Image 1 (cartoon, rainbow, N blue to C red):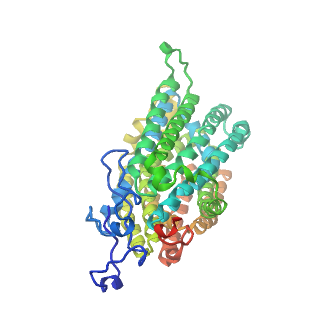
Image 2 (cartoon, rainbow, N blue to C red; image 1 turned 45 degrees about the vertical axis):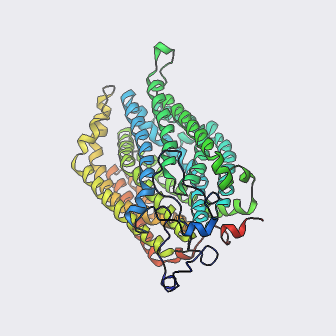
Image 3 (cartoon, helix red, strand yellow; image 1 turned 45 degrees about the horizontal axis):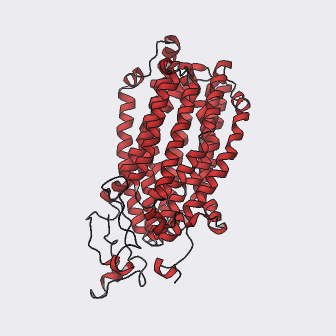
Amino acid sequence: MGSNPVESSATEETQPAAHPPTLKTDPTAIREPDHGMPAGPFTEPIGATEAAGEAEAITHSPPISTSTPGGSKELLRIALPLILSQSFMTVQVFVDTVLLSWYDPMAMAASFPAVMWYWLFFGVLQVTAGYTSTFVAQYTGAARPHRVGPAVWQGIHFAVVLGILFLVVVPLSPWLISLGGHSPEMQRLETIYLQCLSFAALPMLVMGAINGFFSGRGQTWTVLLIEGIGTAVNIALALVLIFGFPRAGIPEMGIAGAGWATVAGSWAAAIFALALMLRRKYRDEFNTLSGWKPERELFGRLMKFGGPAGMQVFLDVLVFHLFTQLVGRLGDAALGATTLTVRLNMIAFLPMMGLGQAICIMVGQRLGENRPDLAEKSTYTGLKWSFGYMCFVALIYVAIPGLLLTVFESDKDPAMFAEIAKIVPGLLLCVAVFSIADAINLSFAFALRGAGDTKYVTLLTFSLAWPLMVIPTALVVFLGGNVYWCWAFATAHIIGMSVCFWFRFRGGKWKSMRVIEPGVAEEGERPA
């Protein structure tokens, strides 16, 4: 997108050519944030404070992109690095699952309930800390870069305090895991993994807040670099710690090794992200160092809008966690099949989270520019891409389920794996159906989040999940039904969500929402 301005309105087109709109006369006539691919991971466009002539000169700068505002080219410039970034997470999930299935199918099955317990508490915190990206996007669209650093620091403060408090999960893990009622050996493995993951909360939260600084401004290739470093460290250590390396004196750690590898990778990524954000050019333009002080009003707005967004994730994870715990009561094979099916779904779905984040960023920037029309156009562009991708994924689930399972096959307990493999193809049929509905969920939910319409998303998640999925699944389990009925109700829940999100977006209330405080252009706000 580069430096070319947004599409002119009808009133702008009637103005004489000799007097183009400026930041002072028209808030929409601002330089758009850079969304192009930098020459290297550290390359940035010239900042507002470094550009010749400040704001007026920026409005006359030559365009460096001919992409249509709100079109595929513009969206994919932001989305591609985020999709690749989520692909790193996909690779990480996939490798951890494969390595644990090779080590012990029981360990693989135990990893998912532990992860669900972890995300039940962590998800609400991560989304709240990471909501800095929406603030950054709207401040960027409004040409107020000096407010970007302080907004990010409010997320960092939140991340540090809550990351430390998260360690209370360590002593509570045995009790939490026991609530699932799984077999004693399964509970032992679940407890070990949950306790290890608890130490990854603080660095993950810090990294989420800082990633908002880069992604909210469209510098998504840097987010890719940060995620790539964390993933590389995680995978390298998992290979060593799970199976051990006797020559180096490293013992076999099994599922604990997978957990500690995640902790190490998270710290590596967080430290690297902080070092990048504190570089001099960011300190000068975005106040990434001087803006470190807590601001009560700004922190309050982060909690006001980011809190409900995080709560939505909490409720979403809660219902799926309850779903997993209930399915686990149908036996280890049903739990193992559910774990494997969800992991296969995550492998395909996580990359599309990057597209959803791009939609969120574009909506935030366009609303900061007071261009809700382009925000809407960007959302529908993203929907087309996510829908097409999910249709392709659904076809794979239906056509080659046996081939997907072969990579997870283990010789350690072939009888157990055979029971799991018998169930998975039927569950993948459900996943194929709700994957298409998830394309709609992803596009509209992230668009509403980018506008600040987070309370509705939270209330919808809470009100639909219980009657459509949790309560029916509990009845199936206690009445002696099978796992296929459980997954049928999960599918109904996701389809219901997609319909409600579509109606909310079509209503258009989000177009008037903003998360940032009212203000004027950047040069008018800076002290003399």
